[in-house]
Image 1 (cartoon, rainbow over the protein chains, first blue to last red):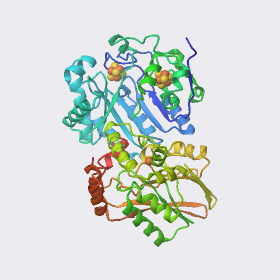
Image 2: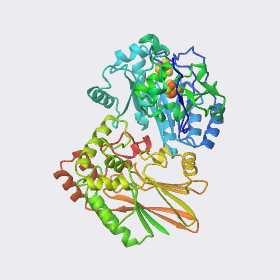
Image 3: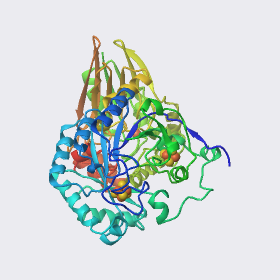
Image 4: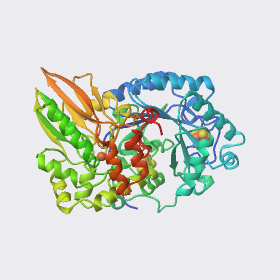
Length: 287
Length: 259
Ligand code: SF4
Ligand code: SF4
Ligand SMILES: [Fe+2]
């Protein structure tokens, strides 16, 4: 096999935080990092952990911040973390939408209004109805997500709904229209929808299939496109265990680049199967 | 010294005429256009004609880059299918109605312009100093990031357009970024006027003023109707609310509009 191609960090624009580690209140069959209530491979981050990296990020001139997990709202410091972050840039939270009681939504709306910078909430839904969503996410989840969305809307926030291609047909324009209509029934009058492709790692590896050996990148393949559009060319991921190359590979020890952002500026070899999906599908996790 | 900057024109001939009248009434020390002469509106050839006639300097936008290289789309930078659908209608219409001579002229425009005034280094770009189609929205362009763009591009004042919404951010270190907005369509605020920017340097201090321009928008809408441009575009001209290209808006800017 040929040498894996190297991608340089052209500019650190997007900083991710694995803010609740790999801890999630549910365990989806397609989760690409196998998050669950028991997965402690990355731990919950504290406000102080996040602040240290935010200070570094401010000096570097990072453009935007993303918070994911696991489930970010399992982190008791989440509101404080967002408040701090929004003083220096826009923030997006990727949530399963289950832990959004009215009081939390009202607090989020206060942060939204108080900041010069945007605060975005992204909720993932799988499928067009309760049955398909719950088949992937677990019984009762759909109803709790609907409550979370209703609470956000009632507080005056307009979440982005992300849907994975596990929702059959959603990538076609009819599927899309159907989904936008569905969102209106959730009470969202300015629907914002993002369709994501799936990665065949973590739990998703068992649900569909693992990567084949040929699904690796070579330098020749990279010459046919713009490597600068890969997430690892403009972003990094911070977890309780240090700085990783991207949000996708945090379970690969080889993807850990150091303790601080300053340690994580060097080019990265695209030697993983997930890199193939990134490249071929043009995957991006940002909004 | 005072300078006027005209953002995206989007084939809005009547707004351009009204803007030029306003600028000559107030008297400035220089006027530049910032690219995206076409898109959205009718009869694209009228814009380069007028700009060439006046001898106005300016830079390429993603539209001029695409048209002059005979590309198949506008490289507007949209990622949502509905946004791209409407962007393609605009581009195909503009491509078909722009003369070859104008397309070639667009290719001769610079991608950036630099000058010094009042001890400040000005940099004029379409999207951002690093990408012709990067969106610099107010709510997603934090101070540390803008500071970095200024430092990396060796500029004290960056003037850009491309998003359609105007704003000015004085940075803690004394630098400035000004998004001049556009005169091609209203600013998604329920008002039919459009905006251009006047930047003044005075004894080391930089100030920016956004000037609202009223123009005969009904006349433009009538022409768009005759050219069978999408009803959604005409609605925007007549109401001041954006109906398309909404998905690129960050949540704060989206919340401020009607759709
Ligand atoms: S996909 Fe999201 S909600 Fe589901 S287990 Fe993984 S982190 Fe939790
Ligand atoms: S998984 Fe994607 S973002 Fe991560 S290193 Fe590979 S190509 Fe880059
Ligand atoms: Fe543009």
